Image (cartoon, rainbow, N blue to C red; front, side, top):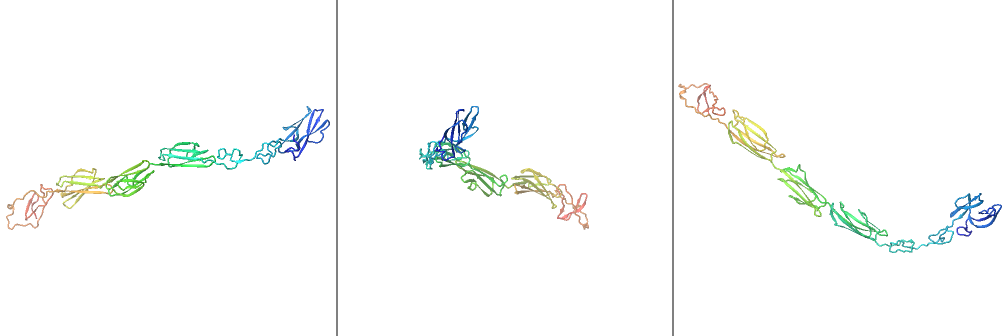
Length: 462
């Protein structure tokens, strides 16, 4: 046990531990009570000191009486009651100036440690193996970081090789890739879909970063398209349209348009384009790394209609008329026939023809007045609002002259003097079989003729 002056005991509420001996029981009895425990016990003196109340670094000592054996036992684990509180033996450094000072040490003062300031990192350039307290003075070699890419430009879908090297680093990473090995060279194939910057970050042992970057340029091949504001890329001659072109991807920012303009912006338009014949427009553009693209568009120019027509220059009364016609660029063809009669009347027919070029036969509507003239007009409707027409004329030859002569008939004149003149002059129309239409017979002298079924009649003077 400890004495009254032992470290951790002096100045504390302690009491002496007294030992008593019982010869009859052959038993020692320990107590901090100064009184005689009873008959038969012999006081042997104070054998140590102990605490009378619990506290730091103290353990309870329990007393147990074994009536069968007739003895007392003492242990720190358990018992019938607490006899005293014994101090725990605490060894260590009791020097308050030491870094490992323990105020509860109650044994020999040993193993004290004292602060030595300096750099305590073995990886530092100025590492102090004797220092036990880092004072923030460690210095480190800056990390080395280099990175490059080859080739430095690719087309989308292509690949390039990224290469790097680090030294004096404990950590290294590349943006878009992640962690990479340190203090060594490395490489990796990359194939980004767009231009990408890769940054290598190397962290040295002092947690300072060194960075290096490289850029891989990714080109999109150019795509150029031509379009118009026409319907089905078709116009009628004389119309105009707007030609538009658009370019995507990476390009030289200028294109070549033919057969007009030449060099043009990569994306633009040209209004009021008005070709007179069907024309193919071609545009081309150059990109990077040998790429290019082109497009073409054909504008169909619909021409105005053309028409020709011819017919018999003349036919005899009662005959058919032969007509030939031809058209170009026609959508619809119509034939308009006009019949002119001797009595001043007209008759018009209008027929849509199924053939755009053909030979046809016209049968005139003949009557007692002709016709004496027929006009054949071919009307052509072309594309849009374009029209054209052509006309031919056929004369109808009508035999209006009787092929007979009136013999002299003086012997038939009345042998009267004077000649008896009728009260009035009567003109009668007679029909002669060898003429085409009814005619009126006239004479250049006053005369009477005998007409079958009519008798004698006077002729109108010419």
